[in-house]
Length: 219
Image 1 (spheres, one colour):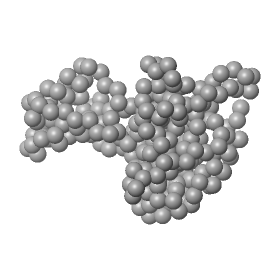
Image 2 (cartoon, rainbow, N blue to C red):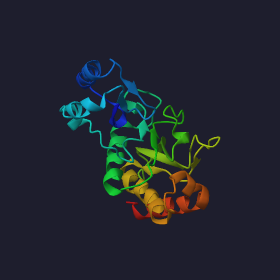
Image 3 (cartoon, rainbow, N blue to C red):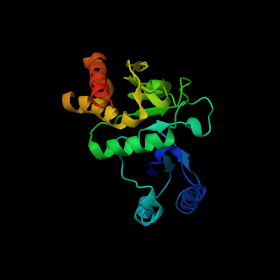
């Protein structure tokens, strides 16, 4: 099979038509999507792989894996949902690309961004769940902001992530999340997953990191 990342789950109709043509020609006329909104074409013969991946569509949707973009997920956001407090798709794409450029990880980190408390993208089972919230700036003007939750998983009977105290304005979301990931990168054990790291150190170090980041980036 061949799999590609579809950032934030968005794909143009003409691009999907190209994948459908590839699936019909080289597979069994079948396309699948995984729970991270990535696209899979099953039943590709090994002898055809080189020819298939030479198609220009794989320049736009590379088959090389990433530790953030491939495992991240988001939902519609305030573009099409009147319950959402924030944009999600554009912010998520920028955030995950930013983190992929900043870190080279052995273990993936699953980041899910949703626009409101209804959590349509199931942010409560993410390593890092980001949720749009109502907020105002120092001049009492409405702004896009987010709450951050840490330590979710579906493994071993599951665990809902735990929300940190503090709202993160959209303007500083990227460096704040980078600081939280940096805590993991700096102090993790060899081959330790993000959830195992969270289980070992608890919520307090993440809360302290968030508070320090909010102070440092406060304008």
